Length: 448
Image (cartoon, rainbow, N blue to C red; front, side, top):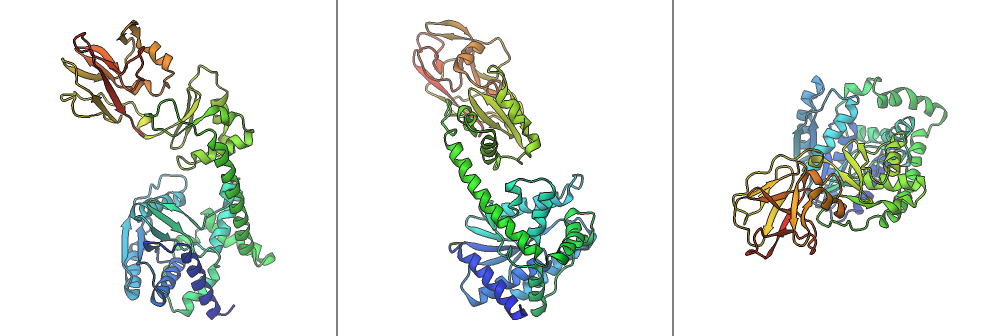
């Protein structure tokens, strides 16, 4: 393929990808200053001159991990000025204490990108065919499943917009030929030569050896990732079908937590259970590999009266009341003591525990909100004084809710428990004196 054909191939490939996003609000390029992103940004500038396109700009992430990188933002600024393209430079901090510095830097970049994307905007990344082949091989060597071996998707949601990789079918050699033909200059990152990094070892030592026997190795490996991506899409459709029967309403509509009914999941084969759970957990946490699915086995086989927990990287999966519940963030921390409720006509913000609202005329006397400490009793019409623990057991309220369930006291007497159903046996709140016979509602808007 001649240089002219390389140029046309790259431009046409980008054009076809962008045609799938006709309503894009803006195009933003992740611009490191290296060969790949330099070619992508230059090609998009060429297309913008030829055709009507959404506004084009670039984002450079400064990691500060290398001394040489101090000059890279200036290089990027000069290049963007020659093209007349706005450049945004964002500095991020990368935790250098982690096991994988590459992963930490990537997560820092993508987190920064996500905060910058507005609704309908596209972030274009310049990963190419060789990068895709390296990614598949790395994941294969780590024992990844179909999801991992599908490697890098051509697009996915990010922030309020979408991430797009329009060069996955273009080889690095094509990009280099384009850059030389156009007289472009780019940054050479010295860390790319450090073969202590797994990806660099593959790039410098493994793939060249493979190409000696299989010249089209990168292209065919990348094509395998496309087949695996299609297989993953079929598995996701199956998982969504299996999850549909488990995504029933919970008995507590006010409890806005991701949850699943357990029985429909247990009716599936073991492999489909794992598939459905991976699909459910994917937007919530880093997924465990097959070796760490023992936590699921323990969760589903625990005795009926147990409250088992499966701890994952970003949260916990609890089993309670015949359902699975996902808890993360403040749900995993004990709430701070509630503040004084000086004006019960106004909502009360509970630190780390949502908001409390009293609907109706407050009873006379000093009101105070507390959490359970044990031994509480509630006076119920027609039932006398009842142990709160027993009442909560009757409602089958999950154990993880109980320590943060707001209790309303009047003159040091428990008069209401938030969000329990209104029935003759257990009203939401009953006025403490016969003269105040109207029922009030104590509504707790808990964390989501």
